[in-house]
Length: 306
Image 1 (cartoon, one colour):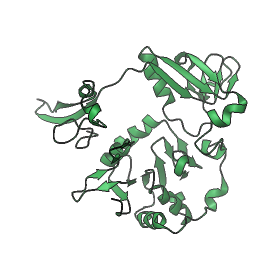
Image 2 (image 1 turned 90 degrees about the vertical axis):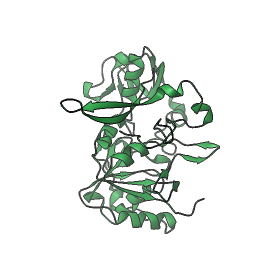
Image 3 (image 1 turned 120 degrees about the vertical axis):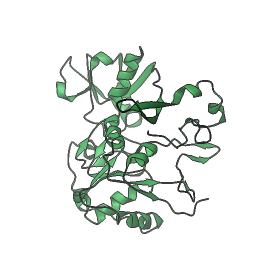
């Protein structure tokens, strides 16, 4: 039922099947992407529930990244801050008859990688590209701002969570601090990008991080989620899982509460998070899944943007 009642819902008068603009809406391909189906339940299938069916698309080429590749194409991710969905993308391309290209930092000897450290088997990989050492900072950085940080990969634990710099006192800090009042010990929480990032910082300042489990949609559990252009990984994370596994957890109702940003909120409570202007297209990310499957939601915004 994820997506029902949102802009990805193809029902006339409700949504547009996920079309980002008029040109996409008029495409003949658009009608095949999202369809509404009904499934019967009960002994006589007397009960019906409606669902959205998202068409799987064939993948001709997959381009993924890893840290190390051996001569058989087995890939490991020891210097990557997230597992994301490299294996899932490689599987989809391989099963579609496509090719898988992997960019890595270094090569290892034939079958020298420990089997438990292999994130993508060589059988799924068609080509490996090794980035020259002098080009790694530009072509293979960890993020937009970090070249490499072992704290974000989970290789080491940092003492920084014991002495977190305080946020400047501005509207972002005020909003984040007010939202943090809703945090409860023992709860599993998702933080969205933007204003919700400040909730983690405030929780760190107040010393409450050990008592809650903060998560981000790329697959992080625990720790202090990074912010800004670093958003996704976390300092001192408890665990890092693949993104699709994280959304299985989210969609199944695993979250106790979430903190999400909002561009616009209508008097009826409808929230716009993906369409900022006619000239700018911004996707919803995991917003739809998270907001529709979470028990307790806090939306963070200034209420001043027009």
